[in-house]
Length: 70
Image (tube, rainbow, N blue to C red):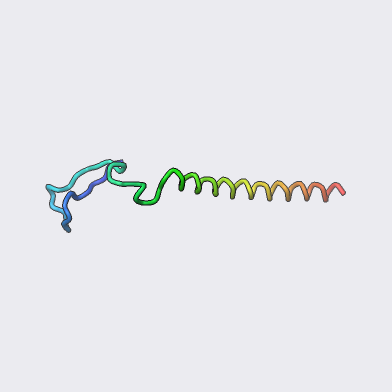
């Protein structure tokens, strides 16, 4: 994805100083705090939440099935 940036610190940006750059060339993810460790941490929490709710639902279904048998 490309977007327009101003190459000088002026508002409004002069027409001759507008450049079209790819997104990944202008954003430094590590300065924003996005590192492989934080991504693993976030995805780990997300997986644990989904798996935990699945276990709660599965346990509830087993309990209801057992109660209906008795």
